[in-house]
Image (cartoon, rainbow, N blue to C red; front, side, top):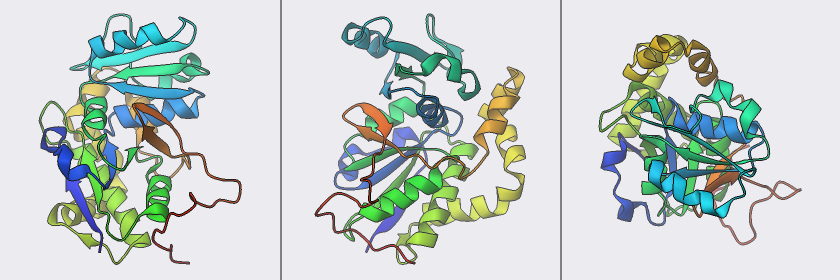
Length: 260
């Protein structure tokens, strides 16, 4: 029987334990929300990297017109990069490969790449990701929801996002066992859902964004289940999950049957 786990920050990721499992990485403010925004605005792919140096190494693979650099380190926009704020990106990313370097979210994604299936999750697309994960989930697989955290610290917004995902999983997969962390995140989500803007605004990263006039980004982040696309990590690249025309999953995939 599958279990649903929640990892509280990227420093707690144990790569070996992700082998054979399904993982969803959350950096609600802002990296994984930014990834979905880039793809939604027409980027051909997003390449998450560990840091500025790793981003610059990728430049050799592209013509100057084919890519765009987006990134920050400890909240400071990197020189020559665009800020990773989802609101401003639509006019820059269409038709481009996005090379994204952030302090927390992209690091969490790269540390999680040993998972059999890996998603970049956000509040905006969480339900679509959960539906896709459940369609292909095997009874022997566990689900690991990974909060990126911030520079080694627990983050309210990621824990809230984890609770949102756990709640979605609980509806579609009620037989799954919740670990204590998963149960706590679900309860936290349920208690704070009605006031989620205030919750995110009161978090450390939320306060930082508001201090830097990014309220519009915060408003963008809090909308749940408004994006039906599924960003999936594949060999260092994140792209939209493509389904067959008839809506079926890959041949031979004996996963759970969704309740009707």
